[in-house]
Amino acid sequence: MLKPKRLVTELIHQRSVHHPHYNQSETAKERIELDIQNSIARVMYLHARIEGTMAASDHRTQLSPSSSGRTIMANISVGQPPTPQLVVMDSASEIFWIMCNPCTNCDQHLGQLFGPSKSSTYIQLCRTPCGFRGCNCHPLDRSPFIITYADNSSASGTLGYETLVFETSDEGSIQIPNIEFGCGRDIVYNNDPGYNGILGLNNARMSLASQIGHKFSYCIGSLADKSSNYNQLILGEGADLEGYPTHFQALRGMYYITMEGISVGERRLDIPPATFEMKENDAGGVIIDTGSTLTYLPDDVQNLLYKEVRNILGRSFRKVIIETYPWLYCYLGVVSRDLVGFPVVTFHFAQGADLALDTGSFFEQLTDSVFCMAIGPVSATGVDNRSSVIGLLAQQGYNVGYDLLNQIVYFQRIDCQLLSG
Image (cartoon, rainbow, N blue to C red; front, side, top):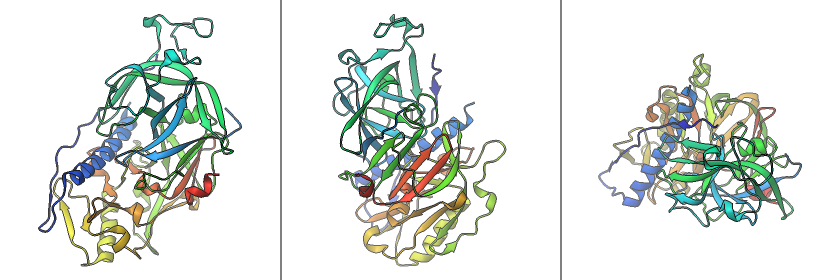
């Protein structure tokens, strides 16, 4: 029986923005509130996890930002006949689950719900093996699952096996049978609804990455571009493992990488070598994650970055103060217009791997006239463990590849369109 995971956090409430010449619309308020809620809840989820005591072909799917831009969605077809499902790509989740019909509290799903009774390839997973394919469990003998996330969203239901359908690089399709997954029957949403499930990609047995080849890669262009057709996820031997490698350590289902420093342009910041190291009590360290929008770094490092930004921008920009989140550094202006020539911010990792953040990755355009530094202090999350988290915005413009067996992650700066063929 799968043990339930119960991870909770408090949600953040209202915030206000005060500036003598700035009136923020309700839409902008909702956006920044949800961005911060999602990222902080995500970091708290990862920290709660810390404290909580197949095939030779490629399997690819198109990725697209969610309607809010806070998460990245994969389009996967399930069953026979195939039913398309939009699921959140989550590098720190150990299970692949989708909503199944009939379902409670599934009103905000996208498209058609998967119906196990209508699929010829669905197999119910029983606690007691029933001895032949296609047999039905007694309701009390069905293998259950329940998962609760830090923002209080949750899913519960039963486990089963099903066939997944993927695209291939030659524009064909391939079917992968007997994928173990969770069939969600009771869903509690978080503040970012509009998906049909979670596609887990950590190194646990039931994650999709572990069930299909122990390799995967994803390429994300821009979260702001909802119309891009070139963002993609590849599972299995066809994963794009190119670029600069660095080793990762998989702990509690999260991918920790060794961060060695940060540069702004040609200037290497004066950061003590031990700042990003994992401590003896498993505190600290740096997690690379697809579930957080923002990046969270140690407070001293975030302050150093802000001082560099302030020195570069000088008095040319007027600061916008967000009272509820004083650590969120925002200015009046437009990134694409006003920050031309701003130096690249580079995260340096072991073995010489780099992650270079241009202005579209280091800053977020909050409204038409306000942009913010997309780096927060770990203390803002309210957790004590203080692990840093590299979020989605920082990974834009990269293909990121994972070799789970050799524990290597690859960073390749590339236009995702070049990988679409």
